[in-house]
Length: 209
Image (tube, rainbow, N blue to C red; front, side, top):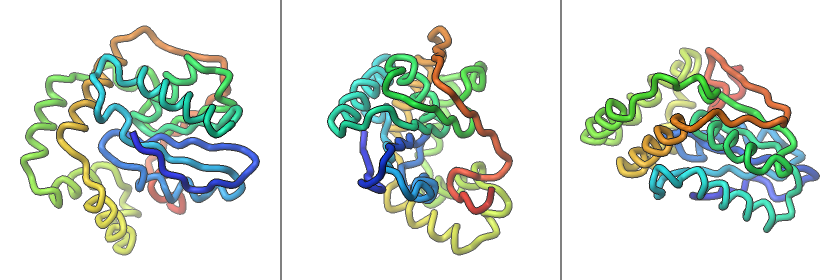
């Protein structure tokens, strides 16, 4: 796991968790919107962990991180797989979270039909392609028409993706962690939660909301 400090000064702390395949770079534009907060982006969740232990290892990491920075109760934002990690953490450490925000498909029922075998097979095929092609496939499925027509944005995203590309092994570990998590009983908490679904790519480019 990797933690990226966006802002070290502020009265409150915001933690933003990246999703499957994409690094923290995809959330930096959103993170910079919190101008009066301490803000950190975390990526690489489950990259190097056995699927059965990945989210528990993340819980241990994030709890130690918050204690080390005397963060108090934080706003925890999770995108896609990061949203599942955020919910899992909150269910185990409710006193550490003041509010929970879920972006994209990360409600407990969103992946009821998830199939690890087919996802792993596609992952194996995907990483036989040049990284440039992986970028094109990933962003084409993720971004809105407005974003795809913004050539400056697309150039920036391409540069960021290729500078910090995903790996086949890390993505496979992430899929394994998700498969294990989805088989667990639902995990809920009493923490206030906002779930945001959108047709536009609100995560990568807030201006297109």
